[in-house]
Image (cartoon, rainbow, N blue to C red; front, side):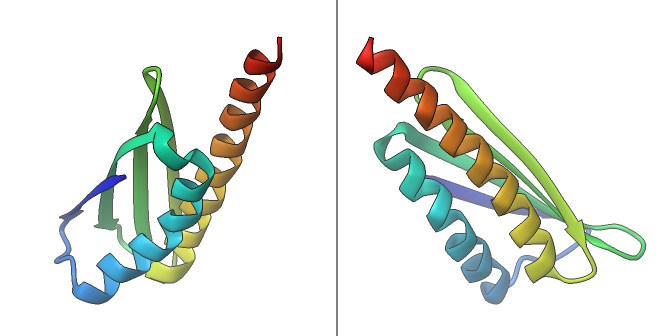
Length: 100
């Protein structure tokens, strides 16, 4: 899965890139070959840091999650957990359709 990381009002460091890649590895494991690309936008609001993730999956399916918190790790964890729930639900739909 191709991951594109960009920043609004913040410079994207190597630490932030590695953190996002490790958090999204669980989502890419759920989607396996079905995950085509991911666009990640990191931004800094007044008091919190925000991570927005949009994943394009097979069959014109789009998964979108936003996570916010006081640290980059907390914000990326929130976004990754929401994406993980959406990916497992989508994978279940694909399995049910195949069984019929």
